Image (cartoon, rainbow, N blue to C red; front, top):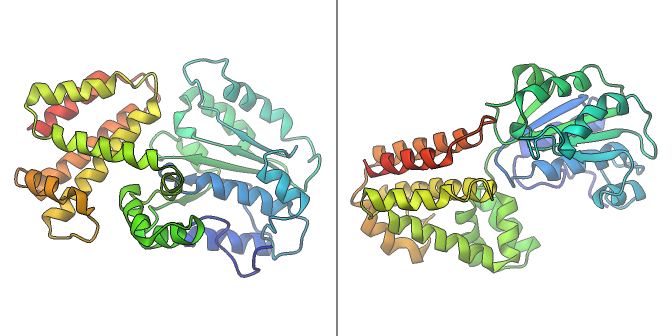
Length: 340
């Protein structure tokens, strides 16, 4: 059983959020709906599950989940009649996707009493992938649900969530997890060396979920380092070479959107590393990348790197939009911007 003083709710970092929710669980003042906003693999889904466990736990533990009772274990295994994860944005280009069909059924289901627990909990993931017209369906189910229903919504960013939805939820913004916390978690939980944990913390860009996955699978790190090396080499290409590099990634977009967005995140991480190196900070730089950075950094200024980060983030935002993006044009514009 977790300690009565443990207010982390199962996630690493973002303690202001977990302390606030722990306090609400203790005094019974939870909202009917929460929206958790932040980068992927940072703990949003883990926290949503822990909230579902906490409101249904049958052990007296100051409102926090014991993790051992039948309710907690069934929810952890996602084998609980009153807890459901829905991804309403999946296959967003169709009206027949499982997520959207299930969302349309919720207006009926929220009126039903819990079957085996104290509360029905609906976890709606990745709302920023959902089409605009489907938010009207969500608004209906968020309006004055019964007291025994809890909604936990997650999204990567605010931009594509209508204000009418945000106004019906209590909002929490997740921040990247500090490297120190990631190193501590990896050495303690994954039993890896401090040196390896430090390298993963640098590469993770604050994503604790990615760091844990990488600690368990060396191929993730190997591929990520290859991608960083390829990107660093591309910076020395002429314009046509840069455009060809971008086109190769763009062609993967409709087959594996998350992979392409991951490539853009990797680029931002590399630009950040370059900025630190330019400013004389070697603490957050991998030793094996120092020579490559030394060769490249002479061609860039801090202002140029800031502009590159902004353009890369703009590209991510565009590709994340609910409209039909053109990845080829987006990457061509990004490569031209980097070249100039």
